[in-house]
Length: 268
Image (cartoon, rainbow, N blue to C red; front, side):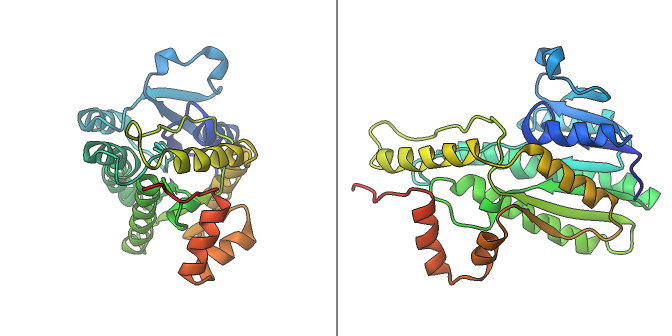
């Protein structure tokens, strides 16, 4: 696929989404970038060549209005998402539904809306920005990890369904990236998990601050967009740890992830 056409990047106001939008615009793509409130986006944070449109993935009505107005898209980069932190036992079910709406159901609806046009033109691509946490057990990230695992499975099944149509699908799973995104803490007052959550959260904050530059992910997206037969699933960073995650016994992996993430025993 040539580096031209119309691209839609969700969550394009910061972090990975901004880096992807900037990289695509530099390659000559006509880029639509979404964020919740483009009017509030300072001029200094806007990428030249990117048209910013409002999209709140929590609003089903907003999504439907957006897809009616978006028009044809040749490359969809489903990047926008949320990363709540908290004990699975204590996260209200309404919050779980809300986060799945943003991380899974919203992106799936965008795919449904844009695929018919791609198939009719016999060209196009869908890229999901996933996470290694969809592959590895991570304490207090159960909702985020589950939504990213669902997204990965959805993308891999979709790829098979689109064989022969000219539409390609790829999932990108970075390790920790310096995005600056806030991670919502969802936990009851006086929770028995409080100390363990704070320990894991401090470790995660450190990993994020020392993580990869978002432009590394953007370059990977560009490579995939240019490929006639892109890899179905691409992990970015830490190849040895990725190998261990995929091949180590799950019991050993769980112990290792508990240690790496700074998990402490929970006080009952």
